[in-house]
Length: 136
Length: 83
Image (cartoon, rainbow over all chains, first blue to last red; front, side, top):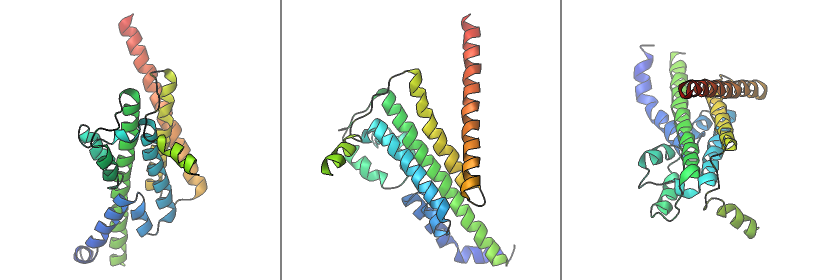
């Protein structure tokens, strides 16, 4: 274990970062890099559907980088591609209020937070695998 | 095809109508399902269709039952305070 640590720092940090970045850009992408295809597909479909359902309930106006920054912060965890939606809605051209707004925020933000869980878990999985391979 | 795409896109440009009715609480179910599925996808050491489905369904109903129990307790507390 003590011998494994220096090798980890030198060799695997870029890979761990890559796993995190791919997992952020495409939900489940981190697992795909780790050849966990079933896990990757399940996570991609679930996170994308949850986010899509949130957008359908509340319209794309629920992604609001100006007046709903905290929600936007959680939403952007789904994928940096959310900034594209934010670019279109920043001018306030798609107003949404009341219950649909609440539901949409909850759905889209939960999708982002679930993706954060997946990113952290895939990085942890990559780290554990590297540690095991170096020990062997 | 273009018409179908337009109708589909239009759904994302205007909000749906959701009233403050008891039925609107059913919107809880898809999000609970998403949480159960993603959580089990991250936690199970090996994904096989049977065990994954079973574990996800068990977690889904655990969350729903817990929320129903919490709602009933809160309703009881509210009734106790009002009466």
